[in-house]
Image (tube, rainbow, N blue to C red; front, side, top):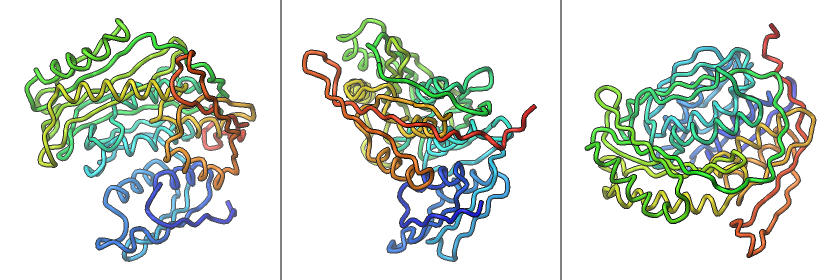
Length: 372
């Protein structure tokens, strides 16, 4: 891997850079990490993320200067296997899982990761959302079978954490190209309302208020209530709702809301939370596309690393995070997507503007996978 490294400035898009660096084998140097800040350098949750990458790879070299404002990262081989990691409670487990979802299919050994920490918080995608939307996206690319599972063993709300998540994923030699251009109509809405260390009635109140909005659109709605007790309920009280709309063609669009963490601002009523979440789901459906906005970058990574064949995916409005991701793709993989905007006409009622992303896969083969 004598390829010259890439240099970046600042702490933004930290995970993207390290994940793509690990997949492409290009080393990366990030300078000026919060160098102007009163508290300069890497935050604890970023250091924890680097440790996680170190656990799933073999031979990764990491150098960080005294103040933590410069990071040098030379990726090793993706090894996989059994990993246990204490995620920092400043961010939720979803922050770490999103990266693992991108890396998992390209490991040498099937990954079995136990992540501990906060399972649901207001900033990152919750484990439930990833379970209901990212796993179906992975299946579309041919990553499926017995071994693919994401399970909430214990819930942990912010700020205390104490949750536990099990993620297992099989390895694949190559990913199959996809043609996702027709999202199809919404056929059903599913969801899960969870509550820990508060009255179990909270979950029912959330469900009722969410249904009051969604029932106007579709009859097939089922929202599970999940009330974990005892040691499975983590260290902090809280509740939340994850909603998923499934289309006829098997696209999953999701939205979620979590109660304000204990001691961090005004408490939120379960009724408001349910209504807001339902409205967020309707917004997500309006954005539409074959992949919901939380998983745009995951799908783009799989498309890029597919076989040398054309992949197409219709996405809703590109999020700023995804746009930056595409720029990083160009840096690490010299991969350019063909981007066509599609404006649905008024009478079609297909929601907002869509973007058709087309690319030819890089023909990336999993070299670290041992051939049995």
